[in-house]
Image 1 (tube, rainbow, N blue to C red):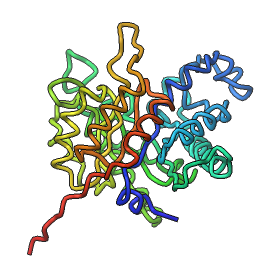
Image 2: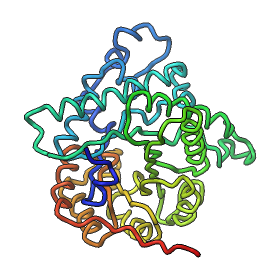
Image 3: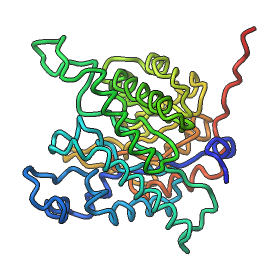
Length: 340
């Protein structure tokens, strides 16, 4: 059995595409989200996609398997908002740990079922990444324009929420931890702190960490104002397996930022852009072949080690990307000279 490090030395790995885009295809009702268990829940839960890992696990597993069949080497758990601070929107804070365990098990079962399926034409190791989203509250920015010093949450509260999420993901059996869609580096630092603390407390072997930030506009900065290089410098103490970018931009707009990151990163580089920019209806029109064309260019230029898709992407996008980069050499890690 290969480690992910073994695989990364050999080839460009494929991470899956959007979960939300795929869930929308099922046109689920409020009752579908609730299932039997939450039939009488006092608030609306439609839109809480993470809840589906408990109420509709067969749908989540089916989506995972579609991405595996498309050629994904890494699938992400359905846990983007599965920590108690974000779950407070649905009064479901107490479900945080359970949701992470359930989502991790959905992904692991999907991998096991795929391995044993006649659809498995990819003789390669598959990995489950525990998805840790950015949270719906930020530590760097005030939600009150009239009080720039105000914060709606503390660092300790964010770290504690992430710690609980990490415990659930690890107990559920994930292979990696992915801190993704980072728009506030201080939130990401709280997640890194929680990961390090969890593995110190439990004395378990630490899992590899993937980190993926979000450049929000043409200025090349995160929402909290950092340049790409500043963001990279701020999180490298985590000693991540990979650092990269996802969301906000399509591949065409993301290219210069991925090129820059590839030149400064001492670890592997990941990139999973949106399917272009949203149209006036908020939908994504970029076709799979278009997205794959842009990402193939990155691969040929030696920018990337892990590629895939974010908002608006589907298994068809992932298949096209996988097909285009299959025979291209991965970006080589820079040689770090020892300081005597």
